[in-house]
Each structure stands twice: as structure tokens, then as C-alpha cells.
Image (cartoon, rainbow, N blue to C red; front, side):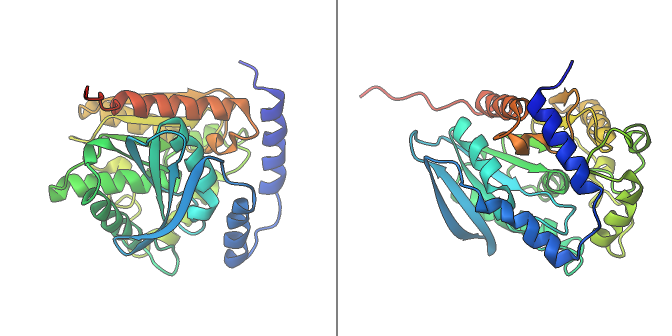
Length: 302
């Protein structure tokens, strides 16, 4: 199905950006955080916080009482990104889902290699559910954050912690070895990611741990006992196989999985909801998923 004109324009712009010279890491981090210079969504309160000792931004809708909680782990190949780069997209989703959102700032590689990021995710989640019923929580993340969300779920399950009600994984990076067939078959179509560099990027995060270790690449983990999950991805991204294989393996393990693949779309395309109609539609579907998995409480008659 043809994509909209706005989607075509954004796609061309992304391809031009990806074809430019690579910049130093600190500059790349600063550039990604510049997204927060754009106005954040209205009708939400934004508070900088520490959650289990982990820095975070908490966004709370102000027009309707939030009855759910979104625990969000940002993407950025484990080396860039922060709550500031992702708060606009997450707040947009949270408002649609009547949810408070907590976006955490885990430690980044190469300064802090695996398992530092997952340790921070665990610490923040455990602190959150000490105050919030896990039955109203959705754990979510995009790209590396999607992989980290999956690794966090597996670690929580193995430790006997209470799991959230649902998981929303957006273009998750689940196989840091880059062994998926889409790394080759979608190479020409992907406007953002060079599939040939996936394993190299994974090594920066993994340190001395093997790239196929289940903690690093949760595609290879035992997925039994995980909560219902929505996986959203684009048809034209080299990480497509990270999502399709995850859905297949999770279903085989008995997990309730919804796989949502959008024609003509790219990596983490819902981040462009302010510009691209297809991206807005994806966030609406994600909000519906959260609402269906975590129904609002029925008011008690006075």
C-alpha cells in the first residue's frame, strides 16, 4: 500500500541524514537530545526524578486521571539517547493511553557496558512497582530500549519479581549478532541503519560478553511466562527479522503476541507522530493495546 506524502518526505530526509559523515559520540548524543528543544505535548506535567537511583523524566497527563503507568526504556544503540530525546513521543502515547509515563536514563556504553543498562532498568522498575501496582504497568522501549525491555522482563521473571501487565516493543533490537535475514534483504530499503555495522555496534555494548548471550541478545532467551506483548516494526528496516523471529519464538513459548508490521515504514517510525500520519496511527494502536490489556477501574457508586 502506498505511504503518505509526508511519510515519503520524512523518509528521504532520514536517508540524507544517514548518508552523512559519522560524528563523534558526544556530538551525536547532543544532537539526539536536541529533539527536546521542540515543544513537548501539552496537557501533561513533566518532572525530573530519581527512580531507584536512576534519573528519569515522569510525564503525567493533566486532563484525565491516569489509570495506567508506562515504564519506558529509550533506544539509541545503547550509546546515545536519553529521556530528553524520547519524552515527546512517550508523552504523546501516554496521553492517548491515560497513563503516567516514566522514561529512565540508564547508563550508556562504551563507558558502561552490559549489564549496566539492565541493572539500571531493574533498579528503576523495582522502585516503581514498590509504589505502583504492576498490574497497571506496561514496560516499553524502542530499538535498543526494546531489547533492554525484553532482557529486563526475563531477568525479573527469573528473579521472581512481579511482572508488568503488558509489554510494548517498538522496532526492538533483539539480536546483536545481526543474523536475521532482513539485515541483507532490507539493506537497500532501510533509510536509517547500515546492517553491516550491527554486530560492531553490539560489541560496543556487550563488552567481553558474547553477542549471542541471552542477556545481551534476548531473542535467544527463554521467553516463557512473559506478559502479552505488542511488537511494532516497519517493513523496510534491517531489524525486521528481530521482530518477526521474536514473535515466532514468543508464541512458541506460550506468550500472547501481537505483531504489527507497517508497509513502507522504517526504524522506530512512530517517533514521527507529529509529522507522519502512519506514525500517529501506530501510537493509537499502541494506546488501544494498553487500554485493552489494562482496563480502567470501574467507578464505585457512591
